[in-house]
Length: 89
Image (cartoon, rainbow, N blue to C red):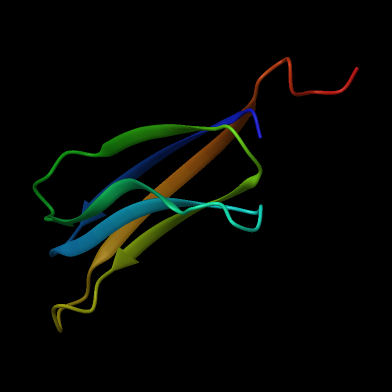
């Protein structure tokens, strides 16, 4: 908890679907839809997004390229930044 997750995604080729959700580790917590699934095409610009996690968990990036028979390429990168208050001294 207390970390910010930053990610970039770019599509090269044909279309695909992309979405992001945060799944907390705590039992009884709800999954948060960070970015609803949406269609991306090669002409779209890169996506740059971030999410500040208030509790421990994982961010799930979903990339679905099964809609077409043609080869599709997507590249992504991510970075996790911990806030200075969440790092033990």
